[in-house]
Amino acid sequence: MARTTRKERMERRQVALQKVSNGMGISEVVDFVSAEWGCSRRTARRDCHWALEELQLGLDTHDLAHLISHMATTLQRVSLKAELSGQYASAIGAQRLLYDLLVSRRLDADAKKAERNGWGYRSSTRRR
Image (cartoon, rainbow, N blue to C red; front, side):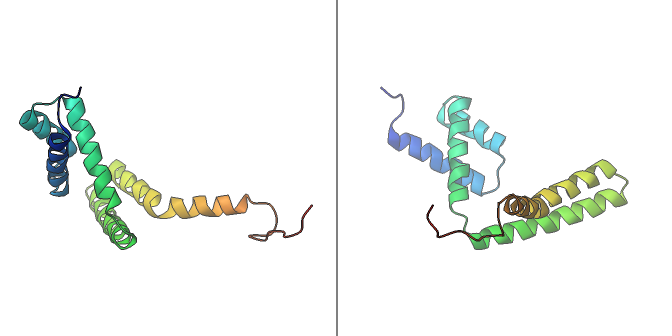
């Protein structure tokens, strides 16, 4: 038999979702949930992961495009500031993240398209 009811678990997860959506860090939310509800850290981490999945489900394509453009702008700013202050490792890290965010997905799609046999997207309707 479970130690907690479904209602209590859902309340705990809703609190975790509220804290995460307000911008609180995951480790802080885990500490808060485990202290507030008296559960283990493993259970609190499970609730936080549930909350993160719920946030990801709520994103539509418009939100994702806005988020990617915001992240790209922020990474460019971080890279520029790091380079101007002589923190070249940080600048390279920001540029690498920017590459992963924007360029690598397109290159991977192009590489996968090039692996196909034949001429592009042609398919045969002839039965063999």
